[in-house]
Amino acid sequence: NAGVTQTPKFQVLKTGQSMTLQCAQDMNHEYMSWYRQDPGMGLRLIHYSVGAGITDQGEVPNGYNVSRSTTEDFPLRLLSAAPSQTSVYFCASSRGPGQPQHFGDGTRLSIL
Amino acid sequence: TQLLEQSPQFLSIQEGENLTVYCNSSSVFSSLQWYRQEPGEGPVLLVTVVTGGEVKKLKRLTFQFGDARKDSSLHITAAQPGDTGLYLCAGARNNAGNMLTFGGGTRLMVKP
Figure (cartoon, each protein chain N blue to C red):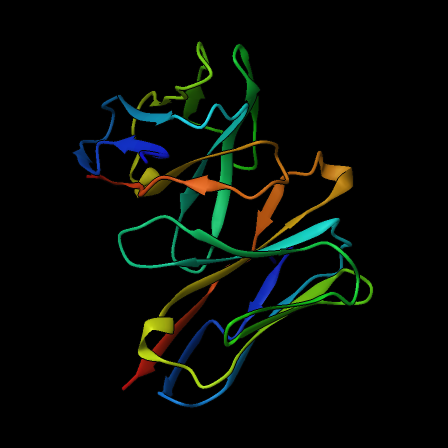
Protein backbone atom coordinates (compact mmCIF):
# COMPACT_ATOMS: atom_id res chain seq x y z
CA ASN A 1 0.00 0.00 0.00
CA ALA A 2 1.84 3.11 -1.25
CA GLY A 3 -0.46 5.83 0.14
CA VAL A 4 1.30 9.18 -0.25
CA THR A 5 4.76 9.10 -1.84
CA GLN A 6 7.15 12.04 -1.67
CA THR A 7 10.41 12.49 -3.54
CA PRO A 8 13.18 13.29 -2.93
CA LYS A 9 13.64 12.43 0.77
CA PHE A 10 16.58 14.80 1.16
CA GLN A 11 17.81 17.77 -0.87
CA VAL A 12 20.43 20.48 -0.46
CA LEU A 13 20.13 23.61 -2.57
CA LYS A 14 22.03 26.84 -2.95
CA THR A 15 20.27 30.16 -2.49
CA GLY A 16 18.53 31.17 -5.71
CA GLN A 17 18.18 27.66 -7.14
CA SER A 18 14.78 26.29 -8.06
CA MET A 19 13.42 22.82 -7.61
CA THR A 20 10.23 20.76 -7.54
CA LEU A 21 9.15 18.50 -4.68
CA GLN A 22 7.06 15.64 -5.97
CA CYS A 23 3.97 14.18 -4.30
CA ALA A 24 1.74 11.36 -5.52
CA GLN A 25 -1.18 9.54 -3.89
CA ASP A 26 -2.99 6.38 -4.94
CA MET A 27 -6.11 6.68 -2.75
CA ASN A 28 -8.15 8.73 -5.24
CA HIS A 29 -8.39 11.59 -2.74
CA GLU A 30 -9.66 14.90 -4.05
CA TYR A 31 -7.98 17.03 -1.38
CA MET A 32 -4.21 17.39 -1.29
CA SER A 33 -2.03 19.81 0.63
CA TRP A 34 1.54 20.84 1.35
CA TYR A 35 2.83 21.71 4.81
CA ARG A 36 6.16 22.78 6.17
CA GLN A 37 7.30 21.71 9.62
CA ASP A 38 9.70 23.81 11.66
CA PRO A 39 10.75 23.18 15.29
CA GLY A 40 8.04 24.26 17.74
CA MET A 41 5.77 25.50 14.94
CA GLY A 42 3.82 22.35 14.21
CA LEU A 43 2.71 22.06 10.58
CA ARG A 44 1.87 25.16 8.57
CA LEU A 45 -0.22 24.97 5.40
CA ILE A 46 1.53 26.25 2.25
CA HIS A 47 -0.91 25.44 -0.57
CA TYR A 48 -3.80 23.09 -1.05
CA SER A 49 -6.00 21.67 -3.80
CA VAL A 50 -9.61 20.48 -3.66
CA GLY A 51 -9.38 18.70 -7.00
CA ALA A 52 -7.62 18.57 -10.36
CA GLY A 53 -7.20 22.06 -11.79
CA ILE A 54 -8.05 23.83 -8.50
CA THR A 55 -5.43 25.18 -6.12
CA ASP A 56 -5.39 27.84 -3.40
CA GLN A 57 -3.04 29.45 -0.92
CA GLY A 58 -2.63 28.39 2.65
CA GLU A 59 -1.05 30.17 5.60
CA VAL A 60 2.52 30.55 4.24
CA PRO A 61 2.39 30.51 0.39
CA ASN A 62 5.08 33.06 -0.49
CA GLY A 63 7.97 31.63 -2.51
CA TYR A 64 6.08 28.49 -3.52
CA ASN A 65 3.96 27.48 -6.50
CA VAL A 66 1.72 24.46 -7.04
CA SER A 67 -0.32 22.90 -9.81
CA ARG A 68 -2.76 19.98 -9.93
CA SER A 69 -3.08 18.54 -13.42
CA THR A 70 -4.21 15.10 -12.21
CA THR A 71 -5.95 13.73 -9.11
CA GLU A 72 -2.83 11.74 -8.20
CA ASP A 73 -0.05 14.35 -8.38
CA PHE A 74 0.51 17.61 -6.55
CA PRO A 75 4.04 19.01 -7.05
CA LEU A 76 5.42 21.92 -5.03
CA ARG A 77 7.84 24.30 -6.74
CA LEU A 78 10.36 26.55 -5.07
CA LEU A 79 10.98 29.39 -7.48
CA SER A 80 14.16 30.89 -6.02
CA ALA A 81 15.27 29.09 -2.85
CA ALA A 82 16.06 31.12 0.26
CA PRO A 83 17.63 29.97 3.56
CA SER A 84 14.27 30.69 5.30
CA GLN A 85 12.81 27.83 3.27
CA THR A 86 15.02 25.29 5.02
CA SER A 87 12.46 22.95 6.54
CA VAL A 88 10.81 19.56 6.36
CA TYR A 89 8.03 19.49 3.80
CA PHE A 90 5.05 17.16 4.05
CA CYS A 91 2.45 16.36 1.46
CA ALA A 92 -0.93 15.04 2.59
CA SER A 93 -4.12 13.80 1.01
CA SER A 94 -7.63 13.22 2.31
CA ARG A 95 -11.26 13.07 1.28
CA GLY A 96 -11.73 16.68 2.36
CA PRO A 97 -9.97 19.59 4.14
CA GLY A 98 -11.19 18.74 7.66
CA GLN A 99 -10.93 15.00 7.20
CA PRO A 100 -8.09 12.84 8.56
CA GLN A 101 -4.95 13.54 6.61
CA HIS A 102 -2.68 10.86 5.14
CA PHE A 103 0.89 12.14 5.14
CA GLY A 104 3.95 11.21 3.15
CA ASP A 105 7.28 10.68 4.90
CA GLY A 106 8.52 14.17 4.11
CA THR A 107 11.29 15.89 2.18
CA ARG A 108 14.11 17.38 4.23
CA LEU A 109 15.30 20.48 2.43
CA SER A 110 18.35 22.57 3.30
CA ILE A 111 19.08 25.87 1.57
CA LEU A 112 22.66 27.09 1.89
CA THR B 1 0.76 33.26 19.16
CA GLN B 2 -0.53 30.07 17.60
CA LEU B 3 -4.24 29.38 17.22
CA LEU B 4 -3.76 26.04 18.95
CA GLU B 5 -1.39 26.01 21.92
CA GLN B 6 -0.04 22.68 23.05
CA SER B 7 1.51 22.07 26.45
CA PRO B 8 3.93 20.98 27.53
CA GLN B 9 6.29 21.35 24.58
CA PHE B 10 8.62 18.66 25.94
CA LEU B 11 8.02 15.84 28.37
CA SER B 12 10.49 13.21 29.57
CA ILE B 13 9.13 10.54 31.88
CA GLN B 14 9.92 7.05 33.13
CA GLU B 15 8.15 3.96 31.86
CA GLY B 16 4.97 3.31 33.83
CA GLU B 17 4.17 6.95 34.61
CA ASN B 18 0.96 8.70 33.54
CA LEU B 19 0.88 11.95 31.59
CA THR B 20 -1.51 14.45 30.06
CA VAL B 21 -0.96 16.66 27.02
CA TYR B 22 -3.16 19.70 26.48
CA CYS B 23 -4.33 21.45 23.34
CA ASN B 24 -5.99 24.83 23.97
CA SER B 25 -7.53 27.60 21.90
CA SER B 26 -9.90 30.54 22.14
CA SER B 27 -11.56 29.40 18.89
CA VAL B 28 -14.32 26.83 18.45
CA PHE B 29 -13.55 23.80 16.31
CA SER B 30 -15.95 21.56 14.41
CA SER B 31 -13.59 18.65 15.02
CA LEU B 32 -10.18 18.00 16.48
CA GLN B 33 -7.65 15.39 15.48
CA TRP B 34 -4.63 13.96 17.29
CA TYR B 35 -1.61 12.65 15.41
CA ARG B 36 1.61 10.94 16.45
CA GLN B 37 4.80 11.44 14.49
CA GLU B 38 7.97 9.37 14.74
CA PRO B 39 11.40 10.54 13.53
CA GLY B 40 11.76 10.45 9.76
CA GLU B 41 8.09 9.81 9.15
CA GLY B 42 4.92 11.78 8.58
CA PRO B 43 2.22 12.23 11.23
CA VAL B 44 -0.23 9.36 11.64
CA LEU B 45 -3.79 9.90 12.81
CA LEU B 46 -4.66 8.56 16.26
CA VAL B 47 -8.22 9.81 16.73
CA THR B 48 -10.82 12.38 15.69
CA VAL B 49 -13.25 13.93 18.19
CA VAL B 50 -16.27 15.89 16.96
CA THR B 51 -18.75 16.31 19.83
CA GLY B 52 -18.26 18.62 22.80
CA GLY B 53 -17.46 16.53 25.90
CA GLU B 54 -16.65 13.48 23.82
CA VAL B 55 -14.20 10.95 25.27
CA LYS B 56 -12.46 8.35 23.12
CA LYS B 57 -10.13 5.61 24.27
CA LEU B 58 -7.42 3.90 22.28
CA LYS B 59 -5.86 1.24 24.52
CA ARG B 60 -3.89 3.27 27.12
CA LEU B 61 -4.64 6.61 25.42
CA THR B 62 -7.70 8.66 26.40
CA PHE B 63 -8.74 11.65 24.34
CA GLN B 64 -11.24 14.27 25.47
CA PHE B 65 -12.85 17.15 23.59
CA GLY B 66 -13.85 20.11 25.73
CA ASP B 67 -17.53 20.87 26.24
CA ALA B 68 -17.18 24.15 24.33
CA ARG B 69 -15.07 22.49 21.60
CA LYS B 70 -12.18 24.90 22.22
CA ASP B 71 -9.74 22.50 23.83
CA SER B 72 -8.72 18.87 24.04
CA SER B 73 -6.51 16.63 26.11
CA LEU B 74 -4.63 13.39 25.61
CA HIS B 75 -3.98 11.23 28.67
CA ILE B 76 -1.60 8.28 28.53
CA THR B 77 -1.75 5.69 31.30
CA ALA B 78 1.34 3.65 32.20
CA ALA B 79 3.48 5.10 29.42
CA GLN B 80 5.79 2.76 27.52
CA PRO B 81 8.94 3.49 25.45
CA GLY B 82 6.88 2.78 22.33
CA ASP B 83 4.80 5.89 23.14
CA THR B 84 7.83 8.09 22.45
CA GLY B 85 7.19 10.57 19.66
CA LEU B 86 5.78 13.96 18.70
CA TYR B 87 2.09 14.38 19.45
CA LEU B 88 0.21 16.94 17.37
CA CYS B 89 -3.32 18.23 17.72
CA ALA B 90 -5.11 19.75 14.73
CA GLY B 91 -8.45 21.55 14.66
CA ALA B 92 -10.90 22.22 11.83
CA ARG B 93 -13.00 25.39 11.87
CA ASN B 94 -16.24 25.84 9.93
CA ASN B 95 -15.48 29.52 9.30
CA ALA B 96 -12.09 28.67 7.79
CA GLY B 97 -13.27 26.24 5.13
CA ASN B 98 -12.62 23.38 7.54
CA MET B 99 -8.89 23.80 6.98
CA LEU B 100 -6.81 22.09 9.63
CA THR B 101 -4.72 24.22 11.98
CA PHE B 102 -1.98 22.37 13.83
CA GLY B 103 -0.62 22.97 17.29
CA GLY B 104 3.13 23.24 17.89
CA GLY B 105 3.37 19.68 19.18
CA THR B 106 4.43 17.91 22.36
CA ARG B 107 7.63 15.89 22.17
CA LEU B 108 7.36 12.91 24.52
CA MET B 109 10.20 10.68 25.59
CA VAL B 110 9.50 7.62 27.71
CA LYS B 111 12.61 6.14 29.25
CA PRO B 112 12.78 2.44 30.12
